[in-house]
Length: 203
Image 1: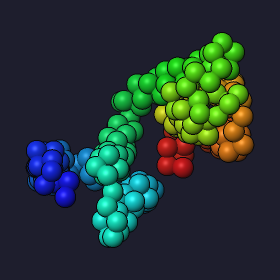
Image 2: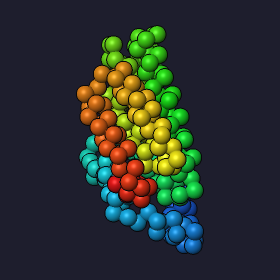
Image 3: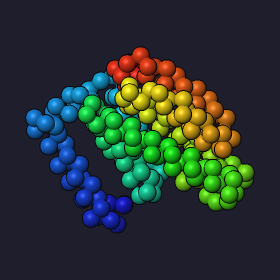
Image 4: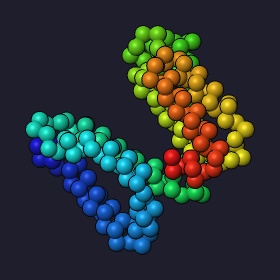
């Protein structure tokens, strides 16, 4: 139905996907990238993220176009992130980008808690910033923290406590119980990162 009503978007997704698949499978560079990603942990994440698409395909009810595009882009974004993460020369840039997301997210949460209550959050008295939902905000901050510790260079270890404090403050503003539990995973990722980059990235 949606391909019939919005044929241009359907053809664009179809042919872009085919072009990508052909270039990835038949070019030496594409095969090299795919070879790096053929690891059990990365494939497991791809399986988990792509699983909703499989359920949607075989489900009898119709989903809106937004949900199809959203689920498709989840897989695409995970792939791009895995490719960037596999390149050691880009890990410092990825860690810096993640840290900037953390700083902005925590700043928005503090603004919402101390200056303008419920500017964006859907829960009274709980900050969420641009994530709207406080639980999603706390989860995003904790998971970005885990990424930061997985990618940051060893010479920046001295700032680990500062980054952990930043994440904790951001999660504290959301008053999310799940966020507090995820924060301990963040601390665990920091401990693992001190064992070496190979250990932290694999785990």
